[in-house]
Image: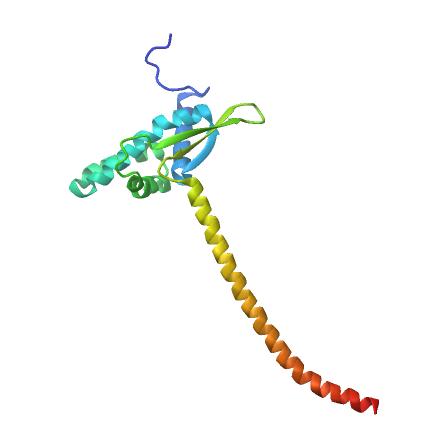
Length: 183
């Protein structure tokens, strides 16, 4: 029996496992949603949840005791080792989480991988609605494309009008010349 042995080994040495979890944590923070194996996703929850809790506490302590906020940021930096992810965690995610008492991530099982049959899963932050964000981006692109297309249509119609005006003035003298040449 394996008593008091917390966590999964994932067939890696301790240093490799900690580096893997740090990189997965940074990727999750930067992208808000990642696709990985089910075991890694479940293990990642044990690392990312305390980091988000520290960020929440730091956001609350920022005004009352800034030294406590700095200490929590340094503790998180020791694990993450990615400045961009650290800034996003403490500035954006901590505010988005707000008053949620825990359970900041969700693991969605996505079936088996084709190559080796490993069980895959998606891990994402609960407060970020990924589908809605994607739909909003698509709508923004469509709106921008429709604006561009209406502007292009206006430009083409203006060009056609200019060409017609120029063409009409050129055709009239041309017709006279052709009539003179026939006579």
